Length: 500
Ligand SMILES: Nc1nc2c(c(=O)[nH]1)N[C@H]1C(S)=C(S)[C@@H](COP(=O)(O)O)O[C@H]1N2
Ligand SMILES: [Mo]
Image (cartoon, rainbow, N blue to C red; front, side):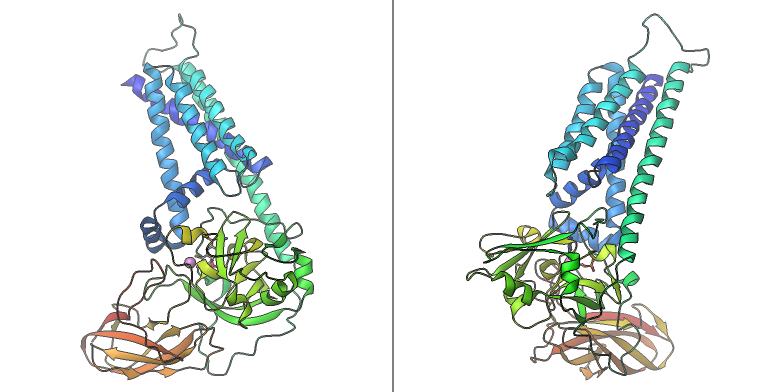
Protein backbone atom coordinates (compact mmCIF):
# COMPACT_ATOMS: atom_id res chain seq x y z
CA UNK A 1 0.00 0.00 0.00
CA UNK A 2 2.73 2.42 1.04
CA UNK A 3 4.64 1.50 -2.10
CA UNK A 4 1.55 2.19 -4.19
CA UNK A 5 1.14 5.64 -2.68
CA UNK A 6 4.83 6.38 -3.17
CA UNK A 7 4.52 5.41 -6.83
CA UNK A 8 1.33 7.38 -7.38
CA UNK A 9 2.65 10.61 -5.87
CA UNK A 10 5.99 10.26 -7.64
CA UNK A 11 4.23 9.70 -10.96
CA UNK A 12 2.06 12.79 -10.55
CA UNK A 13 4.91 15.04 -9.38
CA UNK A 14 7.22 13.82 -12.17
CA UNK A 15 4.56 14.38 -14.81
CA UNK A 16 3.72 17.79 -13.35
CA UNK A 17 7.40 18.76 -13.51
CA UNK A 18 7.67 17.69 -17.14
CA UNK A 19 4.45 19.43 -18.17
CA UNK A 20 5.27 22.68 -16.38
CA UNK A 21 8.73 22.74 -17.97
CA UNK A 22 7.30 21.98 -21.42
CA UNK A 23 4.70 24.72 -21.09
CA UNK A 24 7.37 27.20 -20.00
CA UNK A 25 9.61 26.25 -22.92
CA UNK A 26 6.70 26.58 -25.33
CA UNK A 27 5.65 29.94 -23.93
CA UNK A 28 9.19 31.29 -23.98
CA UNK A 29 10.48 30.21 -27.36
CA UNK A 30 7.57 29.10 -29.46
CA UNK A 31 4.18 30.56 -28.63
CA UNK A 32 1.44 28.34 -29.95
CA UNK A 33 3.38 25.13 -29.33
CA UNK A 34 1.98 24.43 -25.86
CA UNK A 35 1.67 20.63 -25.65
CA UNK A 36 -1.55 20.82 -23.63
CA UNK A 37 -3.11 23.10 -26.20
CA UNK A 38 -1.84 20.93 -29.06
CA UNK A 39 -3.35 17.82 -27.50
CA UNK A 40 -6.59 19.73 -26.91
CA UNK A 41 -6.64 20.92 -30.51
CA UNK A 42 -6.03 17.40 -31.80
CA UNK A 43 -8.86 16.14 -29.58
CA UNK A 44 -11.20 18.86 -30.90
CA UNK A 45 -10.39 18.02 -34.53
CA UNK A 46 -10.83 14.29 -33.93
CA UNK A 47 -14.04 14.63 -31.91
CA UNK A 48 -17.03 13.26 -33.83
CA UNK A 49 -19.54 15.93 -34.84
CA UNK A 50 -22.38 14.80 -32.51
CA UNK A 51 -20.10 15.12 -29.47
CA UNK A 52 -18.87 18.52 -30.66
CA UNK A 53 -22.50 19.57 -31.03
CA UNK A 54 -23.21 18.36 -27.52
CA UNK A 55 -20.23 20.24 -26.11
CA UNK A 56 -21.15 23.50 -27.82
CA UNK A 57 -24.77 23.11 -26.73
CA UNK A 58 -24.05 22.20 -23.11
CA UNK A 59 -21.03 24.30 -22.34
CA UNK A 60 -20.95 26.99 -25.03
CA UNK A 61 -17.79 29.04 -24.72
CA UNK A 62 -16.88 27.01 -21.61
CA UNK A 63 -16.37 23.91 -23.75
CA UNK A 64 -12.64 24.73 -23.84
CA UNK A 65 -11.99 24.90 -20.08
CA UNK A 66 -14.02 21.68 -19.79
CA UNK A 67 -11.83 19.99 -22.41
CA UNK A 68 -8.57 21.18 -20.83
CA UNK A 69 -9.77 19.92 -17.43
CA UNK A 70 -10.57 16.52 -18.92
CA UNK A 71 -7.09 16.35 -20.48
CA UNK A 72 -5.45 17.25 -17.16
CA UNK A 73 -7.49 14.59 -15.33
CA UNK A 74 -6.52 11.96 -17.91
CA UNK A 75 -2.87 12.99 -17.54
CA UNK A 76 -3.04 12.68 -13.76
CA UNK A 77 -4.58 9.20 -14.03
CA UNK A 78 -1.94 8.15 -16.55
CA UNK A 79 0.89 9.56 -14.44
CA UNK A 80 -0.48 7.74 -11.39
CA UNK A 81 -0.54 4.48 -13.30
CA UNK A 82 3.02 4.94 -14.58
CA UNK A 83 4.28 5.76 -11.09
CA UNK A 84 2.63 2.74 -9.47
CA UNK A 85 3.77 0.39 -12.22
CA UNK A 86 7.31 1.74 -11.99
CA UNK A 87 7.60 0.73 -8.33
CA UNK A 88 7.38 -2.89 -9.51
CA UNK A 89 8.77 -2.71 -12.98
CA UNK A 90 11.47 -0.11 -13.63
CA UNK A 91 11.06 0.05 -17.37
CA UNK A 92 7.59 1.54 -16.85
CA UNK A 93 9.40 4.84 -16.27
CA UNK A 94 11.04 5.20 -19.70
CA UNK A 95 8.20 3.42 -21.50
CA UNK A 96 5.41 5.44 -19.86
CA UNK A 97 7.04 8.83 -20.26
CA UNK A 98 8.00 8.00 -23.85
CA UNK A 99 4.32 7.31 -24.57
CA UNK A 100 3.49 10.76 -23.17
CA UNK A 101 6.20 12.40 -25.24
CA UNK A 102 5.14 10.68 -28.44
CA UNK A 103 1.48 11.57 -27.83
CA UNK A 104 2.39 15.21 -27.28
CA UNK A 105 4.68 15.29 -30.31
CA UNK A 106 2.12 13.63 -32.58
CA UNK A 107 -0.55 16.09 -31.40
CA UNK A 108 1.80 19.02 -32.11
CA UNK A 109 2.67 17.72 -35.58
CA UNK A 110 -1.00 17.06 -36.36
CA UNK A 111 -1.87 20.74 -35.92
CA UNK A 112 -2.50 22.34 -39.31
CA UNK A 113 0.22 24.90 -38.69
CA UNK A 114 2.46 22.44 -36.84
CA UNK A 115 6.16 21.97 -37.66
CA UNK A 116 8.87 19.75 -36.18
CA UNK A 117 9.84 22.56 -33.82
CA UNK A 118 6.39 22.44 -32.27
CA UNK A 119 7.08 18.89 -31.10
CA UNK A 120 10.17 19.94 -29.12
CA UNK A 121 8.43 21.09 -25.89
CA UNK A 122 6.51 17.81 -25.57
CA UNK A 123 9.63 15.70 -26.13
CA UNK A 124 11.64 17.84 -23.71
CA UNK A 125 8.89 17.70 -21.07
CA UNK A 126 8.50 13.94 -21.37
CA UNK A 127 12.26 13.38 -21.08
CA UNK A 128 12.36 15.56 -17.98
CA UNK A 129 9.38 13.70 -16.47
CA UNK A 130 11.20 10.41 -17.12
CA UNK A 131 14.38 11.62 -15.41
CA UNK A 132 12.36 12.99 -12.49
CA UNK A 133 10.53 9.72 -12.00
CA UNK A 134 13.77 7.76 -12.17
CA UNK A 135 15.33 10.08 -9.59
CA UNK A 136 12.33 9.68 -7.29
CA UNK A 137 11.88 5.93 -7.48
CA UNK A 138 15.03 4.23 -8.64
CA UNK A 139 18.00 6.41 -7.77
CA UNK A 140 18.92 5.23 -4.30
CA UNK A 141 22.00 3.52 -2.89
CA UNK A 142 20.88 -0.08 -2.64
CA UNK A 143 22.22 -0.57 0.87
CA UNK A 144 20.87 2.57 2.43
CA UNK A 145 17.48 2.72 3.96
CA UNK A 146 16.10 6.15 4.57
CA UNK A 147 12.83 4.91 5.84
CA UNK A 148 12.58 6.28 9.33
CA UNK A 149 10.58 4.94 12.19
CA UNK A 150 7.03 6.06 11.33
CA UNK A 151 7.66 5.03 7.75
CA UNK A 152 8.53 8.46 6.27
CA UNK A 153 11.06 8.26 3.45
CA UNK A 154 12.93 11.53 4.04
CA UNK A 155 14.90 11.34 0.84
CA UNK A 156 11.72 10.88 -1.21
CA UNK A 157 9.87 13.68 0.55
CA UNK A 158 12.81 16.04 -0.03
CA UNK A 159 13.05 15.18 -3.71
CA UNK A 160 9.29 15.42 -4.19
CA UNK A 161 9.30 18.87 -2.58
CA UNK A 162 12.17 20.06 -4.75
CA UNK A 163 10.46 18.91 -7.93
CA UNK A 164 7.08 20.29 -6.89
CA UNK A 165 8.67 23.64 -6.11
CA UNK A 166 10.51 23.62 -9.45
CA UNK A 167 7.31 22.75 -11.29
CA UNK A 168 5.48 25.53 -9.47
CA UNK A 169 8.14 28.07 -10.46
CA UNK A 170 8.10 26.87 -14.09
CA UNK A 171 4.31 27.04 -14.18
CA UNK A 172 4.19 30.57 -12.78
CA UNK A 173 6.96 31.67 -15.15
CA UNK A 174 5.15 30.12 -18.12
CA UNK A 175 1.92 31.92 -17.22
CA UNK A 176 3.82 35.18 -16.78
CA UNK A 177 5.48 34.87 -20.19
CA UNK A 178 2.20 34.12 -21.99
CA UNK A 179 0.45 36.81 -19.96
CA UNK A 180 3.04 39.35 -21.16
CA UNK A 181 2.43 38.28 -24.72
CA UNK A 182 -1.34 38.62 -24.31
CA UNK A 183 -0.90 42.10 -22.93
CA UNK A 184 1.36 42.97 -25.86
CA UNK A 185 -1.28 41.75 -28.33
CA UNK A 186 -3.96 43.70 -26.48
CA UNK A 187 -1.79 46.83 -26.51
CA UNK A 188 -1.02 46.64 -30.23
CA UNK A 189 -4.75 46.23 -30.86
CA UNK A 190 -5.54 49.27 -28.78
CA UNK A 191 -2.89 51.28 -30.60
CA UNK A 192 -4.66 50.80 -33.93
CA UNK A 193 -6.55 53.80 -35.21
CA UNK A 194 -9.17 52.70 -37.65
CA UNK A 195 -9.85 55.14 -40.48
CA UNK A 196 -13.39 56.40 -40.98
CA UNK A 197 -15.49 54.49 -43.48
CA UNK A 198 -15.60 55.89 -47.00
CA UNK A 199 -19.08 54.40 -47.16
CA UNK A 200 -20.52 54.60 -43.64
CA UNK A 201 -23.49 52.68 -42.28
CA UNK A 202 -26.80 54.45 -42.35
CA UNK A 203 -27.87 55.61 -38.91
CA UNK A 204 -30.14 53.08 -37.24
CA UNK A 205 -33.77 54.05 -37.90
CA UNK A 206 -35.84 55.56 -35.10
CA UNK A 207 -37.88 53.01 -33.26
CA UNK A 208 -35.26 50.30 -33.06
CA UNK A 209 -35.46 48.80 -29.57
CA UNK A 210 -32.63 48.24 -27.09
CA UNK A 211 -30.58 45.15 -27.88
CA UNK A 212 -30.54 45.60 -31.65
CA UNK A 213 -26.76 45.92 -31.67
CA UNK A 214 -24.97 43.28 -29.64
CA UNK A 215 -22.10 44.72 -27.58
CA UNK A 216 -18.72 43.15 -28.35
CA UNK A 217 -18.37 41.79 -24.83
CA UNK A 218 -21.71 39.99 -25.17
CA UNK A 219 -21.21 38.73 -28.72
CA UNK A 220 -21.27 34.93 -28.92
CA UNK A 221 -18.01 33.19 -29.69
CA UNK A 222 -17.72 29.88 -31.50
CA UNK A 223 -14.41 28.49 -32.74
CA UNK A 224 -12.04 25.57 -32.35
CA UNK A 225 -9.16 27.69 -31.02
CA UNK A 226 -8.22 26.51 -27.51
CA UNK A 227 -6.23 29.65 -26.96
CA UNK A 228 -7.11 32.88 -28.72
CA UNK A 229 -4.55 33.52 -31.48
CA UNK A 230 -2.38 36.59 -30.78
CA UNK A 231 -1.39 38.07 -34.08
CA UNK A 232 1.15 40.88 -34.27
CA UNK A 233 -0.71 43.32 -36.53
CA UNK A 234 2.52 44.77 -37.95
CA UNK A 235 3.64 41.31 -39.09
CA UNK A 236 0.22 40.21 -40.35
CA UNK A 237 -0.11 39.55 -44.09
CA UNK A 238 -2.98 38.40 -46.25
CA UNK A 239 -2.16 36.39 -49.33
CA UNK A 240 -4.72 36.00 -52.12
CA UNK A 241 -3.65 33.19 -54.42
CA UNK A 242 -4.73 30.03 -56.22
CA UNK A 243 -6.90 30.40 -59.32
CA UNK A 244 -6.10 34.08 -59.86
CA UNK A 245 -4.27 35.99 -62.58
CA UNK A 246 -2.17 37.95 -60.07
CA UNK A 247 -1.33 36.93 -56.53
CA UNK A 248 -1.83 39.70 -54.01
CA UNK A 249 -0.17 40.17 -50.66
CA UNK A 250 -1.43 42.85 -48.31
CA UNK A 251 -0.35 44.20 -44.94
CA UNK A 252 -2.82 45.63 -42.47
CA UNK A 253 -1.67 49.12 -43.44
CA UNK A 254 -2.36 48.28 -47.11
CA UNK A 255 -5.82 47.12 -46.17
CA UNK A 256 -6.57 50.20 -44.08
CA UNK A 257 -5.53 52.49 -46.94
CA UNK A 258 -8.35 51.14 -49.08
CA UNK A 259 -11.87 52.59 -49.02
CA UNK A 260 -13.73 50.99 -46.12
CA UNK A 261 -17.41 50.17 -45.84
CA UNK A 262 -19.36 50.04 -42.62
CA UNK A 263 -22.46 47.84 -42.29
CA UNK A 264 -24.84 46.45 -39.71
CA UNK A 265 -24.82 42.69 -40.22
CA UNK A 266 -26.25 39.81 -38.19
CA UNK A 267 -23.92 36.83 -37.79
CA UNK A 268 -25.12 33.47 -36.54
CA UNK A 269 -23.79 29.99 -36.02
CA UNK A 270 -25.10 26.93 -37.82
CA UNK A 271 -24.84 25.08 -34.50
CA UNK A 272 -27.46 27.33 -32.94
CA UNK A 273 -30.46 25.37 -31.69
CA UNK A 274 -33.96 26.74 -32.22
CA UNK A 275 -34.23 29.60 -29.72
CA UNK A 276 -30.47 29.46 -29.05
CA UNK A 277 -28.00 32.24 -28.23
CA UNK A 278 -25.36 31.96 -31.00
CA UNK A 279 -26.42 35.01 -32.96
CA UNK A 280 -25.56 38.69 -32.76
CA UNK A 281 -25.65 41.91 -34.72
CA UNK A 282 -22.73 44.29 -34.95
CA UNK A 283 -21.64 47.32 -36.95
CA UNK A 284 -18.73 45.99 -38.97
CA UNK A 285 -16.03 48.01 -40.72
CA UNK A 286 -14.10 46.38 -43.51
CA UNK A 287 -12.71 46.21 -47.01
CA UNK A 288 -15.13 44.92 -49.65
CA UNK A 289 -13.79 41.64 -50.91
CA UNK A 290 -15.18 42.08 -54.43
CA UNK A 291 -12.71 44.84 -55.34
CA UNK A 292 -9.75 42.80 -54.09
CA UNK A 293 -10.87 39.76 -56.05
CA UNK A 294 -11.22 41.87 -59.18
CA UNK A 295 -7.67 43.10 -58.77
CA UNK A 296 -6.46 39.54 -58.35
CA UNK A 297 -8.49 38.43 -61.36
CA UNK A 298 -10.45 35.30 -60.45
CA UNK A 299 -9.93 32.66 -63.12
CA UNK A 300 -13.00 31.11 -64.67
CA UNK A 301 -14.02 27.88 -63.00
CA UNK A 302 -13.01 28.99 -59.50
CA UNK A 303 -16.14 28.69 -57.38
CA UNK A 304 -14.72 28.51 -53.84
CA UNK A 305 -12.70 30.89 -51.69
CA UNK A 306 -10.86 28.91 -49.04
CA UNK A 307 -10.01 31.23 -46.17
CA UNK A 308 -7.19 29.98 -43.94
CA UNK A 309 -6.52 31.32 -40.49
CA UNK A 310 -3.29 31.60 -38.57
CA UNK A 311 -4.16 28.55 -36.42
CA UNK A 312 -5.08 26.44 -39.44
CA UNK A 313 -8.87 26.71 -39.75
CA UNK A 314 -10.21 26.50 -43.29
CA UNK A 315 -13.55 28.01 -44.26
CA UNK A 316 -14.94 27.65 -47.77
CA UNK A 317 -17.06 30.48 -49.13
CA UNK A 318 -18.72 30.50 -52.56
CA UNK A 319 -17.00 32.98 -54.91
CA UNK A 320 -20.47 34.06 -56.03
CA UNK A 321 -21.25 35.42 -52.55
CA UNK A 322 -18.30 37.78 -52.82
CA UNK A 323 -19.25 39.07 -56.26
CA UNK A 324 -23.07 39.27 -56.27
CA UNK A 325 -23.23 42.74 -54.75
CA UNK A 326 -23.62 41.84 -51.08
CA UNK A 327 -21.30 43.39 -48.52
CA UNK A 328 -18.88 40.49 -48.17
CA UNK A 329 -15.85 41.99 -46.49
CA UNK A 330 -12.56 41.56 -44.76
CA UNK A 331 -13.63 43.10 -41.47
CA UNK A 332 -11.20 45.08 -39.32
CA UNK A 333 -13.65 46.82 -36.99
CA UNK A 334 -16.58 45.78 -34.82
CA UNK A 335 -18.90 48.28 -33.16
CA UNK A 336 -16.42 51.13 -33.46
CA UNK A 337 -13.35 49.23 -32.22
CA UNK A 338 -10.65 47.14 -33.85
CA UNK A 339 -11.87 43.53 -33.94
CA UNK A 340 -11.64 42.00 -30.46
CA UNK A 341 -8.96 39.29 -30.22
CA UNK A 342 -11.68 36.62 -29.75
CA UNK A 343 -13.49 37.75 -32.86
CA UNK A 344 -10.57 37.50 -35.24
CA UNK A 345 -8.11 40.37 -34.71
CA UNK A 346 -6.73 41.83 -36.85
CA UNK A 347 -8.87 40.70 -39.81
CA UNK A 348 -11.74 38.30 -40.40
CA UNK A 349 -14.07 37.45 -43.26
CA UNK A 350 -17.74 38.32 -43.09
CA UNK A 351 -20.32 37.14 -45.61
CA UNK A 352 -23.90 38.36 -45.11
CA UNK A 353 -26.38 35.51 -45.53
CA UNK A 354 -23.98 32.68 -44.67
CA UNK A 355 -23.52 30.97 -41.33
CA UNK A 356 -20.19 31.71 -39.68
CA UNK A 357 -18.66 28.33 -40.55
CA UNK A 358 -19.14 29.10 -44.25
CA UNK A 359 -18.32 32.77 -44.50
CA UNK A 360 -16.70 34.30 -41.45
CA UNK A 361 -13.13 33.02 -41.02
CA UNK A 362 -11.45 34.73 -38.07
CA UNK A 363 -7.70 35.49 -37.81
CA UNK A 364 -7.57 35.05 -41.60
CA UNK A 365 -4.19 35.09 -43.33
CA UNK A 366 -4.86 33.51 -46.68
CA UNK A 367 -7.56 33.39 -49.35
CA UNK A 368 -7.13 30.64 -51.89
CA UNK A 369 -9.30 30.61 -55.01
CA UNK A 370 -10.17 27.04 -55.88
CA UNK A 371 -13.21 24.83 -56.53
CA UNK A 372 -15.65 23.03 -54.26
CA UNK A 373 -14.82 19.87 -56.17
CA UNK A 374 -11.16 20.12 -55.33
CA UNK A 375 -11.20 21.00 -51.65
CA UNK A 376 -13.41 20.35 -48.60
CA UNK A 377 -12.97 22.95 -45.86
CA UNK A 378 -12.76 21.96 -42.19
CA UNK A 379 -16.47 21.70 -41.40
CA UNK A 380 -17.44 20.29 -44.79
CA UNK A 381 -14.92 17.51 -44.29
CA UNK A 382 -16.85 16.75 -41.12
CA UNK A 383 -20.18 16.45 -42.89
CA UNK A 384 -21.60 19.97 -42.67
CA UNK A 385 -23.24 21.42 -45.77
CA UNK A 386 -20.91 23.13 -48.21
CA UNK A 387 -23.30 25.98 -48.95
CA UNK A 388 -24.06 27.47 -45.52
CA UNK A 389 -27.01 29.68 -46.46
CA UNK A 390 -28.76 31.07 -43.36
CA UNK A 391 -32.25 29.67 -42.81
CA UNK A 392 -35.19 31.90 -41.89
CA UNK A 393 -35.68 31.74 -38.14
CA UNK A 394 -37.18 33.57 -35.18
CA UNK A 395 -36.82 33.61 -31.41
CA UNK A 396 -38.91 34.68 -28.41
CA UNK A 397 -36.73 36.64 -25.98
CA UNK A 398 -39.50 37.95 -23.68
CA UNK A 399 -40.99 36.42 -21.60
CA UNK A 400 -38.38 33.83 -20.68
CA UNK A 401 -39.28 30.14 -20.89
CA UNK A 402 -41.14 28.98 -17.76
CA UNK A 403 -41.63 32.57 -16.59
CA UNK A 404 -44.43 33.27 -14.11
CA UNK A 405 -46.24 36.43 -15.13
CA UNK A 406 -49.28 38.28 -13.85
CA UNK A 407 -52.44 38.25 -15.95
CA UNK A 408 -53.13 41.26 -18.17
CA UNK A 409 -51.52 42.61 -21.31
CA UNK A 410 -48.10 41.04 -21.75
CA UNK A 411 -45.60 42.25 -24.33
CA UNK A 412 -44.08 39.26 -26.09
CA UNK A 413 -40.91 40.26 -27.95
CA UNK A 414 -38.01 38.82 -29.86
CA UNK A 415 -36.06 38.77 -33.11
CA UNK A 416 -36.41 37.15 -36.52
CA UNK A 417 -33.75 36.83 -39.20
CA UNK A 418 -33.26 35.78 -42.79
CA UNK A 419 -30.09 37.58 -43.85
CA UNK A 420 -30.04 38.56 -47.56
CA UNK A 421 -33.80 38.00 -47.85
CA UNK A 422 -35.13 40.10 -44.99
CA UNK A 423 -38.18 39.55 -42.81
CA UNK A 424 -41.68 40.27 -44.13
CA UNK A 425 -43.80 39.02 -41.24
CA UNK A 426 -43.65 37.47 -37.79
CA UNK A 427 -46.61 35.64 -36.28
CA UNK A 428 -47.44 34.32 -32.82
CA UNK A 429 -49.60 31.38 -31.91
CA UNK A 430 -50.89 31.05 -28.35
CA UNK A 431 -51.63 27.49 -27.18
CA UNK A 432 -51.52 26.20 -30.75
CA UNK A 433 -54.29 28.62 -31.81
CA UNK A 434 -54.45 30.72 -34.98
CA UNK A 435 -51.37 32.69 -36.07
CA UNK A 436 -51.63 36.39 -35.29
CA UNK A 437 -49.32 39.02 -36.76
CA UNK A 438 -46.68 40.56 -34.51
CA UNK A 439 -45.60 44.17 -34.97
CA UNK A 440 -42.25 44.51 -36.79
CA UNK A 441 -39.94 47.23 -35.53
CA UNK A 442 -37.83 49.20 -38.00
CA UNK A 443 -34.61 47.42 -38.90
CA UNK A 444 -31.28 48.31 -40.47
CA UNK A 445 -31.28 46.12 -43.57
CA UNK A 446 -32.13 42.71 -44.99
CA UNK A 447 -28.78 41.55 -43.58
CA UNK A 448 -29.79 42.21 -39.98
CA UNK A 449 -32.34 40.67 -37.70
CA UNK A 450 -35.72 42.32 -37.25
CA UNK A 451 -37.10 42.98 -33.80
CA UNK A 452 -40.79 42.26 -33.23
CA UNK A 453 -43.35 42.54 -30.45
CA UNK A 454 -46.81 41.25 -29.78
CA UNK A 455 -49.40 42.38 -27.26
CA UNK A 456 -50.85 39.34 -25.60
CA UNK A 457 -53.92 39.52 -23.40
CA UNK A 458 -52.75 36.85 -20.97
CA UNK A 459 -55.32 34.97 -18.92
CA UNK A 460 -54.37 32.92 -15.89
CA UNK A 461 -53.18 29.38 -16.40
CA UNK A 462 -50.37 27.61 -18.24
CA UNK A 463 -49.78 28.71 -21.83
CA UNK A 464 -47.50 28.02 -24.73
CA UNK A 465 -46.27 30.67 -27.14
CA UNK A 466 -44.85 29.86 -30.57
CA UNK A 467 -43.27 32.18 -33.15
CA UNK A 468 -42.67 31.86 -36.87
CA UNK A 469 -41.30 34.23 -39.47
CA UNK A 470 -41.88 34.77 -43.18
CA UNK A 471 -39.05 36.10 -45.29
CA UNK A 472 -39.52 38.72 -48.01
CA UNK A 473 -39.66 36.05 -50.69
CA UNK A 474 -42.83 34.83 -48.96
CA UNK A 475 -41.34 31.59 -47.62
CA UNK A 476 -42.70 30.69 -44.19
CA UNK A 477 -40.34 29.30 -41.58
CA UNK A 478 -41.07 25.56 -41.52
CA UNK A 479 -42.49 23.80 -38.46
CA UNK A 480 -40.49 20.61 -39.01
CA UNK A 481 -37.80 20.23 -36.39
CA UNK A 482 -34.32 19.65 -37.74
CA UNK A 483 -31.09 19.45 -35.75
CA UNK A 484 -28.34 21.99 -36.46
CA UNK A 485 -26.36 19.26 -38.24
CA UNK A 486 -25.77 19.31 -41.19
CA UNK A 487 -27.03 22.69 -42.42
CA UNK A 488 -28.87 24.55 -39.66
CA UNK A 489 -31.79 23.94 -37.27
CA UNK A 490 -35.40 24.41 -38.31
CA UNK A 491 -38.62 24.48 -36.30
CA UNK A 492 -40.64 27.04 -34.39
CA UNK A 493 -39.36 28.42 -31.12
CA UNK A 494 -42.01 27.56 -28.55
CA UNK A 495 -41.98 28.43 -24.86
CA UNK A 496 -44.18 27.62 -21.88
CA UNK A 497 -45.20 30.27 -19.33
CA UNK A 498 -47.51 30.37 -16.35
CA UNK A 499 -49.89 33.30 -15.95
CA UNK A 500 -51.23 33.89 -12.46
N1 LIG B 1 -10.39 30.78 -37.47
C1 LIG B 1 -11.64 30.42 -37.20
N2 LIG B 1 -12.65 31.16 -37.70
C2 LIG B 1 -13.92 30.82 -37.45
C3 LIG B 1 -14.23 29.68 -36.67
C4 LIG B 1 -13.16 28.91 -36.17
O1 LIG B 1 -13.35 27.89 -35.49
N3 LIG B 1 -11.87 29.32 -36.45
N4 LIG B 1 -15.54 29.37 -36.42
C5 LIG B 1 -16.54 29.92 -37.32
C6 LIG B 1 -17.88 29.77 -36.80
S1 LIG B 1 -18.51 28.20 -36.75
C7 LIG B 1 -18.64 30.85 -36.44
S2 LIG B 1 -20.27 30.66 -36.08
C8 LIG B 1 -18.07 32.20 -36.38
C9 LIG B 1 -18.29 32.81 -35.02
O2 LIG B 1 -17.74 34.09 -34.96
P1 LIG B 1 -17.64 34.84 -33.58
O3 LIG B 1 -16.93 33.91 -32.64
O4 LIG B 1 -16.93 36.11 -33.82
O5 LIG B 1 -19.07 35.08 -33.11
O6 LIG B 1 -16.70 32.20 -36.64
C10 LIG B 1 -16.29 31.36 -37.71
N5 LIG B 1 -14.90 31.60 -37.96
MO1 LIG C 1 -20.67 28.38 -36.30
